[in-house]
Picture 1 (cartoon, rainbow, N blue to C red):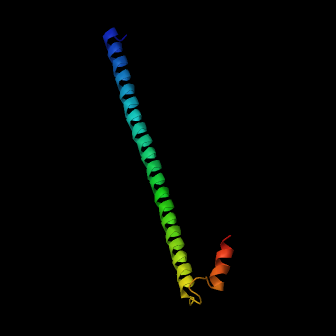
Picture 2 (cartoon, rainbow, N blue to C red; picture 1 turned 180 degrees about the horizontal axis):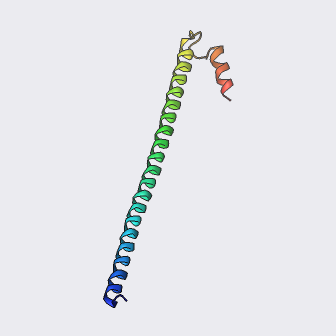
Picture 3 (cartoon, rainbow, N blue to C red; picture 1 turned 45 degrees about the vertical axis):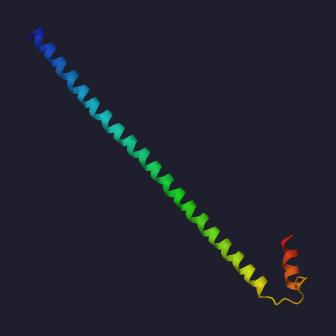
Length: 96
């Protein structure tokens, strides 16, 4: 029959081994959770950058269209200094 010291040593080794395995699993779990969190942050950053690019493109399109309208308005010859031309009046009425 094994001695009490031998049984105590075996139990201690089993506890140490299971504790070590638990620690390894714990640290791997932390690393995996941090990696998932970092990936979520990177996805949010990418979505934000994409939205910003779309916003900038829309802003550029709006500016281009405004320039076209202004160029079209100034392309008409001035008939009377105090009055707007008929096309300008129609464009202003269309804005309502």
